[in-house]
Length: 202
Image 1 (cartoon, one colour):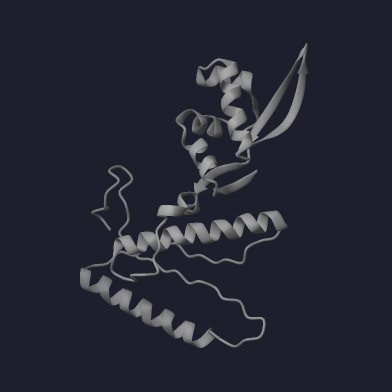
Image 2 (tube, rainbow, N blue to C red):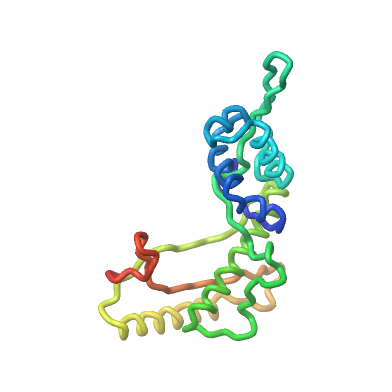
């Protein structure tokens, strides 16, 4: 089981978003049979089997073992990942495109960049899983509390200058065997987990 998996197929995304199937995916963090799941979610076993077949068809769950009970073979299933992310590739016709109108101060442009990040890294992970390799990535995540809006603006300006200098130092357009990497930096207010709005303390 992976810690996280990326859903790129529209039909798989649709299957995962069904409330009952999402519940079954959560229940299948640990292996279980349709009979066990039926008791947990309050559905007939046949109905649970119907949902499990749909999830298995899209690679969201997998067979762990088969147990013989009298004249019945019980299939024990498990989710293929502990959590899932739906790639914008699943909505190919309407996925965000940050290329045409770059605006460093636009929250919607930031969201478009984040969507591209999910799609690109998801594609890399999917390919690496097939090749049984790791993806060379690096990420930082932290918080900073600004005393004022002017401090925030100054921080953003210094950050942009520092990154621009680093890119200029290490970027080699003509390096034999060189490989391009995308650099993404974001700065946004923290979110209050209770209200889902901007945290007033940040």
